[in-house]
Image (cartoon, rainbow, N blue to C red; front, side, top):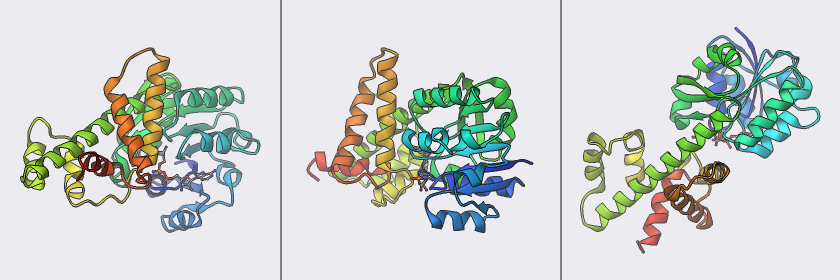
Length: 291
Ligand code: NAD
C-alpha cells in the first residue's frame, strides 16, 4: 500500500480518491473547495491544508484538475508538486490536458528525478464511481508498471499507449468520438420527435442494434427526459475539442467531422449551456431546428 497525494477532488477526483482509500492506500488530498475536502475525510482520506501538505512524503501523486493552467499552477509553480516531492516519486496526471503540457511536465519532473505519467481517463462520473474507468497512459513502461496497482484500483481498462503525451492524444481521440456520438444521438432524438415517433422507444431499438453504444446505454433516458445535470460539462468538452483540433493541426491531418462537432459544442457554450452535461448538445440541435 502506498502513501498517495491527490490534488483535484471534483466530479471525478472525489470518487477516485475514495476508491484509493478503500483499497488501503493512505490518501492525503487537497482541493480549493472545502466541501470536497469534507467528502474525502468521510471516505477515509486526510484533508490537507494545501498542495505541499497533501503531497509531502507521498510515494505516488495523482492530479485530477480541469485543464493545463491548473496543472501548471499545481505541479510546476514554485512551491508546487515538483518542488515538494522526493526524487523517485511517481506523478500521474490524470487530468485531460494538451499533450505539450504533459511533455513539459515530464521533462521538468525528469530534471528532478521524478517519474511522470500522463494518464487521462474515460468512462465519466459513472466510471469513476464504479472504479471502471478506461485509463490511457503515456510515459516510460517501467513507470507504468510501477503505477499500475494504483490505476487498477480506479479502472478496468488500463493501457500503456506510448511515450509522454501519448495518453493525452488517445484521450483527444476518445473525446472526438464521444462528441460525435452525442451530436448524432441528439439529431436522432430531434428527428424522431419531429416525426411524431416516441424517441425513448426509438432509441431503445437503436441501443440493441449496430448503433448501440455505451452512450445510448447510459444516457438515452436522461437525454429524452431533458436531464442535463453534469456529469461532464460542455465547458470541459469544449476544452477537449480544442485539444483534438490542435493535435490534428500539429500532425497535419484533416478531421472535418471533429471540426463540425467542435462547432456544435462551441454553440452550446455560446447559448449559455457550458455548465450543463455534454448530452445537452440536444438543446443545441433543437434550437438549430427551431424546436
Ligand atoms: P471538476 O471541475 O469537477 O473538478 C476539478 C477540481 O479541481 C475542482 O474540485 C476544483 O476545485 C479543483 N481545482 C482547480 N484548481 C485547483 C487548484 N489550483 N488546487 C486544488 N484544486 C483545484 O472536473 P472533473 O469533471 O472532475 O474533471 C477533472 C478532469 O478530468 C478534467 O480534465 C476533465 O476533462 C477530465 N474528465 C472528466 C470526466 C467527467 O465525466 N467529469 C470524464 C473524464 C475525464
